Image (cartoon, rainbow, N blue to C red; front, side):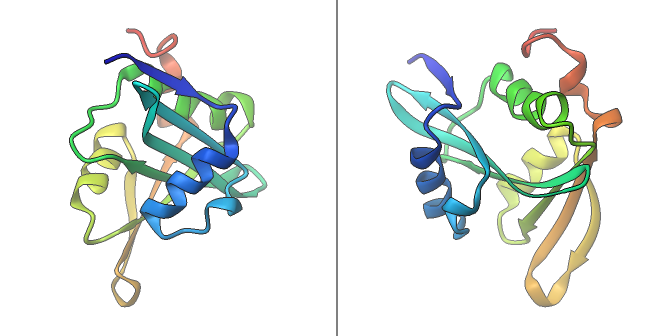
Amino acid sequence: MAFRVIDRDLERCQDWLGDRTGTIGYDMVQAIGLERDGELVAVTGYNNFIDKSCHIHFAIQDGVVVPRNYLWFIHYYPYMQAGIDVLIAFMPVANERIIRLAQHLGYSLRCWIDDAGLMLYTMNKSNCKWTRIKHGIK
């Protein structure tokens, strides 16, 4: 059961993410996937790049615990490669699992939008622990 991070199969990752989040997958400028035994089990997508910020979207198959090197790479790309300073994540209030993940990763709750059933989380580059470790290894 080996995991493999992929970042060169944009269309496949866009489709997988779009199917699970209800977003329009092709709106993603970049998407990073995680495969286990050749099957996607997680995808992180990025869109709405404005100045030094962008939106980040997560989808993870139930029961999958993602490895640290994936968590490192999904933060290395926007902060170190794309030059982003702030990641913005809209989380559905009903998706407790993805909210717990965002909090565990270090995202901060900024706003709760009752009428839309959304929570807005952000993470600044300066607060991201994942950019301070090498390739996901302490």
